[in-house]
Length: 158
Image (cartoon, rainbow, N blue to C red; front, side):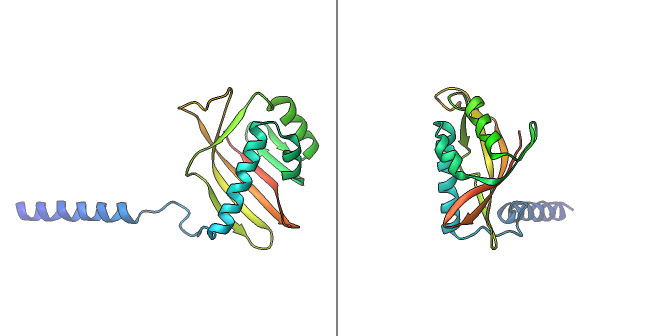
């Protein structure tokens, strides 16, 4: 009986170890795009974040598509690029900063359109990023046209 208990315990431990090495994120059916697309979108996200954090309204104007749909879980839907730019100028510039959570960025292609970017970001007031920043999920849909990337859809969850 003792040998059976030891065998079952070792079998269970082996199974747990095996599962630990083979467990993957929920999205196992998706394969990330080659690094070139990832690098392009990561660079665009960094450009967006720099513009957002430093009130570069001209860059924000360039990056946001005329065909914008911005879904915010608390603020609702906004479809006006002009109204978004006005809201950014009035409520964000010099007041709020964004920080992408390191290692959270995922990028996937959208054939014939562009890419989807998903990740976690946090927002804070002041100069320095707090050590305990609350991160929230976001999705950006990027459209590539005329060799330029533009954000067409945003889903921001808090």
